Length: 448
Ligand code: NDP
Image (cartoon, rainbow, N blue to C red; front, side, top):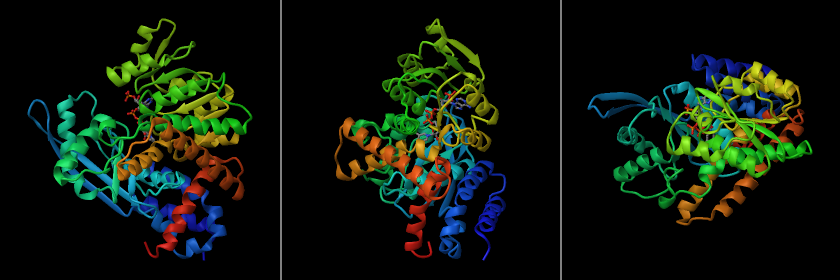
């Protein structure tokens, strides 16, 4: 039998060969698989039963045409995706992303990450992901509605409350989930929790909107506790100004931090007095405007074109909450030089592998996305439970459960990092803790 190292190397090679040109997926698979070498050494039965070869291969991949009509009456065509990655732990669960950059490699990377993230939550959820290269920016409400309906005209055959439960992601918020739910209901004649992130009047969960941002901050707070400190008095930078970023700001501020910089895909704002969240919410959630407008409303604030510059802002805590690969090695060096103590990934894979390595090498507490941003899907799991019971829990009940889940995710990653010889490395620890549960379930379920 090949050594654990050789075995993992061979699986990585197969992933690259079988999925050519899908660089984001290669990156995600490499990161997880490399951290599993000590696990394979300890559990040769996983290698004997080709577990890694099975786990990197999605159970099902669906690609479909999404035709829709714009406001001028022209026919448009986009491509839709749903990858049902792994159902060992429960129904497939994972968001839908609408963004022009979406292609199969992005959905596969997100779906793969989702498998381990969902496992870490401790809830009964498998992993999946979906999306389209449709760009909701600049589209009217009716165009977005027609697109969502057409998307669901195909997707409805593949999803269900006990089989696959999609949710939002970039470009898919409450409005889009509402339109998709309406169409699903019309097509199937059913009413159940087939999608999460629904409106509060029709099966949504309190605290779902806040969950990813809040969860990321709860997780970061655990990392700070390990350093015998807290958010109190800390200077915080948060990239993005979408759902995750906004609620990370809210919770970090509640815990005594001061958020001085935020961004969007055009540039970033710096406000040494602390960024006013009401203005950000108005600009982004209500008016759907650019973040540059903030500087017009707050005299002390500066706007700088280009989003990478945000990492030059001196801070104690950095929370990348925008998109993949938005924080590179150079940005990581700058953060380290400026004394940053903790970085947690609110977004999925926002730090490049070089950046993550620099943080770990320099003893910056580093929380990987599959752990730090698992609060969103965890609360989606809680929404599924409420829908099944036909009940709604209070904000406080959901928030308390979310907090406990995030504390446990941190603990599981920390303990696994110690057990497998890289204490404090939460990348390895979270990968291993997430993997072990899926692996045990797959072994118990036979050849799946
Ligand atoms: P949104 O669409 O609400 O917001 C994304 C934000 O990031 C926008 O402000 C966008 O700006 C900005 N942005 C995009 N690209 C860049 C860039 N290169 N540099 C700086 N800012 C940029 O998405 P979410 O907040 O929901 O998601 C953000 C990330 O978190 C994604 O990686 C997502 O997969 C992940 N995530 C989200 C969860 C959730 O519950 N929402 C759960 C777990 C993970 P602009 O307006 O200009 O496009």
